[in-house]
Length: 209
Image (tube, rainbow, N blue to C red):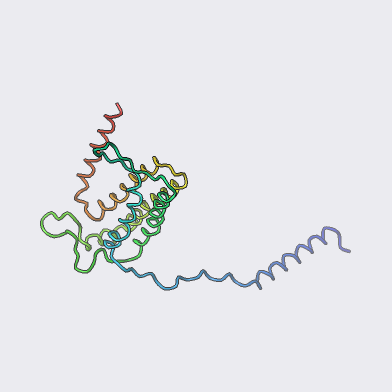
């Protein structure tokens, strides 16, 4: 004679068996779809920067500013929806486009060795840059992510339409760009740039007093 406890236990065994059978018969999850072909670079890093990254960044750099003219101080700022849309285009293109630097590509066009010849050349050659990236690829990716983070920051600022924050983000973008260039393109300028930054900081500190 089966008791209530035995009936419950038996039902549990049958349930587990049914679940196991269902799992065994369930079709496997389909594999993640592969990319339609490998990404192949069209231009060098130098050309990508000159013809895409640098021009589109002006949508952010030029969005806020002040100019002293004969008529006084002329202020530039986003005022219309179209103005803010232009800033957004810059941020989206920058955020997506900077990831193209993760695609292997030459550093400069064929035959272009940058301004890397002669005594005390101001720029590194493509061979020197490649050696640095090969030695520390994590740093190269970190520089890419730093610039992308600024672009993402600008996208959030566009939602709020905050002009002051946009001006500050322009400075962040300049630092991200310069930080990468000083590492891989013209590291010889690092001391001069750092000294300029120290003088600027001292001037701003004196103005606040």
